[in-house]
Picture (cartoon, rainbow, N blue to C red):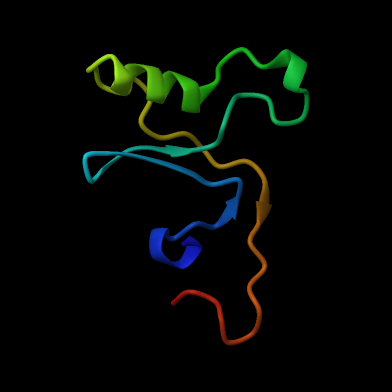
Length: 76
């Protein structure tokens, strides 16, 4: 799946709605301190889509470790 979507970090979240990419990015605004999260981007995207709306923030910068590919298995 990482190859298919072009994921480059973990986590690298993709939310689709009826075949279109509706959100791509990180889970929330504070990966280091979960109790300090003020914005959960994935939850906000899903809530917007489930209520028939549009995702207010469709993309956020990725935070996390880069995916380490085995030699010969890296995406092109």
